[in-house]
Image (cartoon, rainbow over all chains, first blue to last red):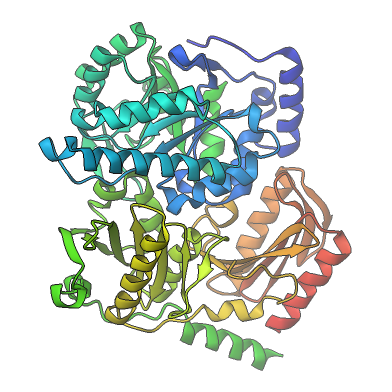
Length: 298
Length: 292
């Protein structure tokens, strides 16, 4: 499902860089990363993205970007915003070459009618605006490519007037290029809701070969209706809405056949065989994880 | 020399990872009387490693990697409806509490007057005490919100058990060029390497050029030797080593610039930054002398 490749000039530059960093085998260093487009945003990203939430080590992120990854995912809620600061320090000299996705996380405990009051709407707008401005400062940039509502759980929040107005105005002001939400719970219903409203450009969902995940560090378990999720993701693709996969390695290793050793790289290939997935944002915390995961980028 | 190494190690063992009694977290939530006229506007919620994800999503792994055991979170509101969220994280010991605080504090933060292990930045206050890491975040940024934050933070410093000091390992770091409050403790994946744990680091500024010093504490001298060789191999495979000696090596890194590493007893020490080779080596030998 690869769609766009880099130019010959970019490729030669990248391959030379990879030889000196020693991250890839000579065969892979000579290969070209595969790119896909994030739906209607038109933003071109590598099919493997770097999930920065697991690291505060700038040299690790730089090593990942040296392999050719051009898409990275962070969030205001990671390490109290310091994850964005780390990302900003790394990318400040080549910001335009990188597609940055961040997330705005707000704490609203009101539900139902209480959520719709003027006071709560004002609070939501205020929190989201503050969060975006802090993200821009931390990332040392004047725009974020895609900004997501972090951890959406209900239709009433993604369809909330204050949330929609915030994203709309942020786009108009040029502070963001695309908007969306990430979701861990209730993801099928939220995807279905967006397929109807078509408000959001990018949706980040948990997706892997197993249809569930057991997080390696947190021990958290979650599962979803794989068939229903895939059906909604196909509809999203038709609507030109981008799906970014997360929890990609949390389903464990995968093997497509008995003669192939199970690995996380095979698990990523399984995800990327689906055209509705525009990128797999893989959380990476050390060099071993980068070395294994980037095999699936070429 | 051996005697001073033993003393340095003993000091570190005695001072780090102070593990106090794990009391009931609900006792750390201020009572209505203590808060008056402020009220708790949302009942306290409790999370542990199994469900921390439900509270802070993708932020959870960083806490769990740093020893997180449980958290209590609640909202408070003042008479003018100004709201803030309070989190009290139990990180199992004081080293972990310092560790997560050091990763999350902002370099632009303002120190607090009533506690040495805390800071205020924007609409938030963070501090650690004993095995607890405490965060207070107001829903708006204003002088009134700051005043509210400071008052509640002060109350919480009295509720949370006292104790805990900055790890003694930092006494081995030079003071010259040091950026204040830049000490960090990283429990896992130090320098992005799976086999390197327990890294102490400090940030420096030499005429606008940043450099960093890392002290990685291993289990013993053999463990340090094995890990040092593993790291040297990684650098060799990355074609980034320029000078290679038995106990040390120097080279380059695509983010930091120049790098200088040496192993001494149970420590791996690194100096990384855009600084001249002679200066980097001088700093490295200074730290080695400090440990000796």
